[in-house]
Length: 209
Image (cartoon, rainbow, N blue to C red; front, side, top):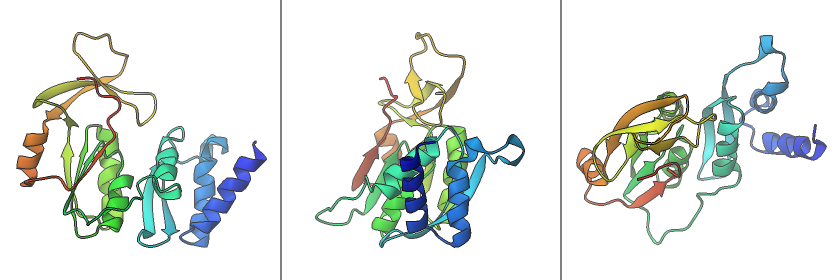
């Protein structure tokens, strides 16, 4: 075990703990792959506390080969989405919302904005809905993948819970793939009844038009 990595995890877990119980829960979550199979858990609800405007959070995270932990670290530990805007956006569209961590971050940063999340993967959608509920975040959730035209898309399912990609029906795909709705930006704006997007987040690197 990397001692430096262990110290870093202990320090971050203590600094951003929601409670003493949450501190130990987070450590167990991070090292769940080392626990005996009989006591392993696939999902954890963990409380965190961050400086304002984020404050207290409760997040449902999966022990999915570190995928959820990695995204959590990007959003809340390293503040990848912290930036200053000349004015607060009135609408926020999160394309590739995954399990909702960026949506929650934006909601806490811009609490008066209307928020919409677009996510194609059923497993992610389930956790997304739960995380928004746990943190009292009101958002419109649209099941599908953004695309230039409306219709249906074939998606290859990645080995982790991110990095899934849209493929053409003529392409050779892996063993696991699903068909999902394709939704264009004009259609999204019509569904949401927005005349413009104030802040657009795009995390759909697996898309091939």
